[in-house]
Image 1 (cartoon, rainbow, N blue to C red):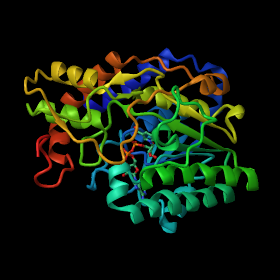
Image 2: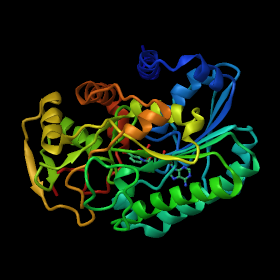
Image 3: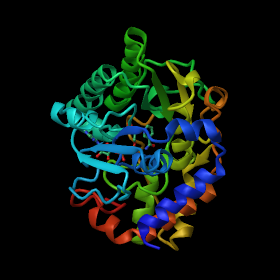
Amino acid sequence: MNNYEKRINLVKNYLDRIDFGNEIIKYYEGRSILVTGGAGAIGSNLIIALSLLVGDKGRVVVLDNLSAIKQKDPWNVTPLSNILFVLGDVRNDVDLKRVFKENPSIVFHLAAFFANQNSVDYPEISAEVDVIGQIKLLEYARLAKIDRFVYASSGCAIYGSYPKLPLKEDFISMHLTTPYQINKMTGEMYCNFYHHHYDLPTVNCRFFNSYGPGEVPGQYRNVIPNFIYWSMQGKPLPITGTGEETRDFTFVLDLVQGLIKAGYYKEAIGENFNLARGREVSIKELVESVLKATGNKAGIVYKERRKWDTKPRLLASIEKAESLVHYKPIVDFEEGFQANIVWFQDNWDKINALADFPPGMSSAVR
Ligand SMILES: NC(=O)c1ccc[n+]([C@@H]2O[C@H](COP(=O)([O-])OP(=O)(O)OC[C@H]3O[C@@H](n4cnc5c(N)ncnc54)[C@H](O)[C@@H]3O)[C@@H](O)[C@H]2O)c1
């Protein structure tokens, strides 16, 4: 079995464990669906699931400029016959016209200038992609009279500093600490505006700390792929803080489940809700899992907490998603982490060759 077949199998097996019911299967069958950012960590999993759901008569159109992996080979996009990859930018009208020619009836908007530190370093590009790009997309979506616009928002972004746990949707904070967080909040507000003013059926899904197959390491990437990458090279793992910090790590296919349901249930329209595992894992626990799985004896180095990182703990309430769209995460950290390691090992040559760290930053210890 090649790496693409393994990935399709993982998604198939996951979907088999979810009882979507005939209504959802029928709803997706034969549709044309646009996924922006479909070559990314979450999008590359979503497009496989959608490809299976829309079937031979449907089509999944991916719009991605591949900026996250800074190269022109969409290797993270599984080559399935009903997936159309369009190399393009959400800010570019020519590219948007191209993808809307495929008459999508649902848009999953996942493209973003990822993430916190990147936006601190490049605040203007971050706003151009995340805000202007999204407004353009919403305009095309409303003119095309689509059935659903599902927006990838962020729980870590929206809830700001020092909120009460577990994080619930009715908590609003103005204390956001990076341009990325501000953009994600703005993105939700624009969805709400297009819903209220034009009746565009928008949904804001607030993801929490995704991990799993499809996410590559890099200067601006998440902690899990970077830890695995460094650990596979026998390097010590840097903890920026005490290690007691927690995150609500969510297996990427659980997020995919939530997105598929957000694209279907009418109750989701005009709403915002968390998609998370609903459990805390400490950074120390994560480090131990990574060191053990990779047989790395190099240990830990402690570093200063980043100024914008004001959340010692993250834990989401998933009650709203459960009641609105019957969201039910099923993958525990141990199982998801194992799948993540296997994908890393299988794709190591590609990942290692493409890991996007500037010179001097490819090591955990600087
Ligand atoms: N990964 C997480 O833990 C997490 C948490 C909360 C929210 N989110 C949100 O979910 C979405 C997907 O996250 P991800 O982890 O898959 O990120 P990612 O960076 O892996 O994927 C985003 C994709 O968008 C593409 N892209 C960037 N700018 C673009 C542009 N101008 N035009 C077209 N494509 C562009 C990138 O090339 C990339 O493939 C993002 O909107 C992110 O903000 C992610």
